[in-house]
Amino acid sequence: MGHIAALWRHPIKAHGRESVSQVSLIKGQTFPGDRRWAVAHEAAKTDGGEWAKCANFSRAAKAPALMAITAQTDEAAGKITLRHPDLWDLTIDPATQGDKLIEWVRPLMPADRAASARLVPAGEHGMTDSMFPSIAIHTIASHQAIEDRLDRKLSTERWRGNIWLDGFAAFEEFDWISKTLRIGQAEIEIRERITRCLATTSNPDTGIRDADTLGALNGGFGHQDFGVYGVVTKAGAISLNDPVEVL
Image 1 (cartoon, rainbow, N blue to C red):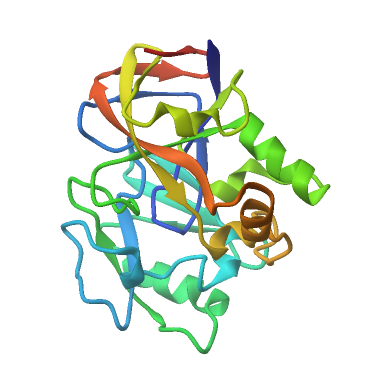
Image 2: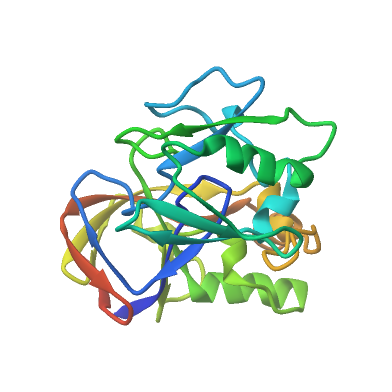
């Protein structure tokens, strides 16, 4: 049996991460407050409101500097504050002030990529990278296996997961496919492995690509997968240090 080591949400897809100490998971829904908004670029074929592929949005795989954005949500006011080491702090109401975010993020976007155009709502699904309402689950041991392969310390925030678990073996999570985890008061059915992209090569403190995470996965383990996607099958509250059991 393991336990919850960390909980993270990303209010705006690819534009900021935020740690939380507890949440209440809802059956069939994504992690609360996670990827409820996304930044569509000028070539996007969506205006939001429903799930769309990640290729429609500005993301760290194409703009590594985005990885250094952190977020802080004021749920009562309906506002999000974003911070980046090279920019000023920005507080917006995402429902009405998306234009301010587009202007703020402009210096971080590469000139040879489609420019960020508009902030769009995710709808009920959430703009996860899976076609189903998923929660990304990672283990500390798997992260440490990548650190060992690269012979250096890395921030777990590179992987942009929701739930981090400790007390399990490296890559044990791949054996959980089609099984259910009891996490705190909730239950999550594990559906599939997560195939990683260039976003994970960027340092979340600086936004600079500085670690060959994909090479470490492919060269050391014969695949490009890290973490698993799950679906909430039983609602319930989860908190840091809650026990985790494979059913």
